[in-house]
Length: 116
Image (cartoon, rainbow, N blue to C red; front, side, top):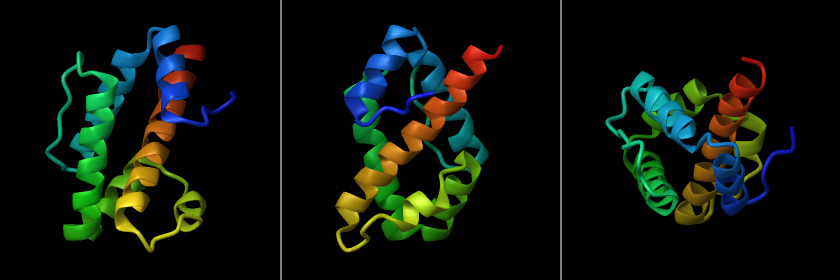
């Protein structure tokens, strides 16, 4: 599996394989498991999804760091990938973490689709 390099690539792959709704459902499932009140409608636009997810990650980093770490654990975002990010600018960090979350969720959806 070739992981997408950008958000646009990820959304293009998800749309091409008709798995965008599954990606949104996987996000909803993992956020619910992390006990974070963020539920996306299946019809949410990709740009809105990215914006709301980025905003939520930013708030978690700034205000509820332990819940942020729990979310990363539940989603299974690579600890090495997160440690490799520059944490000087929290806004930029939250944007990069948002993409890591989306990539990991996309992996789950893609593998489930491929090997179901």
